[in-house]
Image 1 (cartoon, one colour):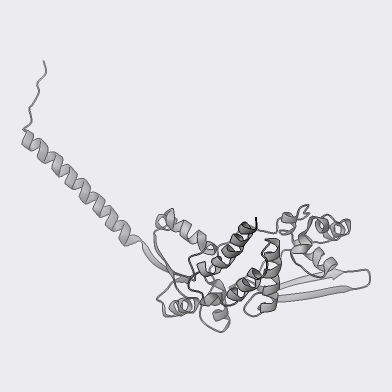
Image 2 (cartoon, rainbow, N blue to C red):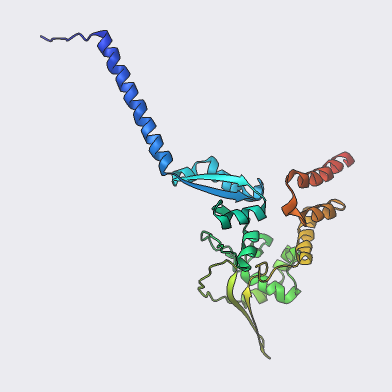
Length: 270
């Protein structure tokens, strides 16, 4: 024999309402604690462009929140961003070049970078792409061709028997360095021949604030890469002129329109 106790519907509904209220308060409490625990971080971005896509991907997929960070990505001119870091209004900037140039003049800033995988991984390259990630090939090409440009990565050069022979003779020695700023620290290249030994040490990598690349070298590199992408005149010169003052450009779409105009002209020709 079983006994069933009938519950007053009003009491039953009251219990359900109490349970819902309790659950809602619990969720609000958890959200409040989560929000309070999140560390606010302001990051200055020179532009909202593909160069800084990784920052926005991290925000989109909640990577920062998962680490307890409330990150604000703010598009700010580079000089303003550097000044904001000095005053404490901003925490970071993705404009590493401007920040390090300021650091080289005594501004109290440091580069914070995570350790990445070694990129010069191809010791005996057989393709153009592998050659671009080969320390041995870069040294061999510099010796044989006396320059490093896009042309030196052509399959003809990469598979040239004489070039391969030079690649085989290159030996690298890792020297652990403690660097507060990327690109600093002595790196020595030594070339031994039958007649003599040639050695050179570089303390600051090309492009470092204390060893900056000239605009002429940057422009030469850009022209070489542009030709590989079939960018033609006058688009090449117009885009190069705009790139020379890129930090003053408020909207990167102004630069993109130059290339779009060339593409449209090609379509009309076809």
